[in-house]
Amino acid sequence: MNKFIHLFFITIPCFIFLLACETQNIVPETAETGTKVSFDIANCRKFVQRNNNNEGEIFITGSTNASFTTAKIKFKNFLGGQETGWLPLTNDGGNKFSGSFVLKGGGYYPQVIIENANQVIEDTLMLWNFKVGEVFAVVGHSLAEGQDPYNIDNFDKQWCEVITWESGRNAFWGRLGDILKTRLNVPIRIYNTGIGGSTSLQWGNSAVGLPFESPIFDWKLRYPYQFFENRILADFPKSGLRGVLVMHGENDINLTQDEIVEGTKLYMKKTRDLLNMPDLTFFVAKCNRGSDNEKEVKVRAAQKRILNEIPNTIVGADLESLTEPTFRHDGTHFNFKGIEFAANKWGEALLDSYFTSVKPLLRTK
Image: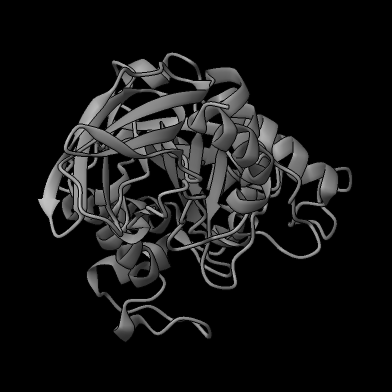
């Protein structure tokens, strides 16, 4: 049997199991020669934001345990995308190879051929996928962060990624990933960077080091924004970003309209400055309890001002329509029905036209 076909049929049943694990270095099954090929996953760029022409540039670096003269790679599409022909990998010396490749939006598994003196010494389908799709970050409070047990874990983790804090939750963002993946036919990554107990003013003041009162966050350490800033500096330049999904409101009821609006301006400007992207888009949810209480009416008015006064903001999910007791188990936080509806509301808000008109941040590292 052809060696590649043999490896293909051995490898495919392993995909679902292996890809559910966060592994730092995947080594595929080897040929009779004993040659091994591995990717340096920590230094690869395996998920990147596509541009408005449905393309994105991934980066691969890896090595073999045998000397070689040439290496080449083919990207086989498993979700949307467009399969490539054979593309040359750069021989970096010391049995290392690398390459940058522009791919159509989609999910891919790479096939690698290693040659020495025009003789194939390894031909293998790698057990690590590469993705060109849509990337979002989340700014918000506990409804964005998620609360146990109201959490959705049954989503397509192969093509929909939710990146959380160390003790974070998927909340409903994995379900939103499923919705967008099915509709757009590309992989989805969402950084769930919501932080429970936070307000718009705390995010804004901590972004620029201004004082505020809180039993939870130390403004001198620039929390809560500092957590988000770490992600901005470490991750977004590597993956790119379509935009930021904002969920503030329920915790803002004791703020004035001006405090809500000015705090929001501060953290949006700081984020744009750090990414050197003044037109980065923020999708601002109608996030409040939806009642006629005077404080809730004030929050809704502030959110309308944000959309009118801050450039490059777009109305996000209509979450104020998710009222208690149907969707909120304690008057504020979503129950299981609420998180399902929240995911759908975000899916409705992210119109197809945005994925060709909203300018994304593209990978810079």
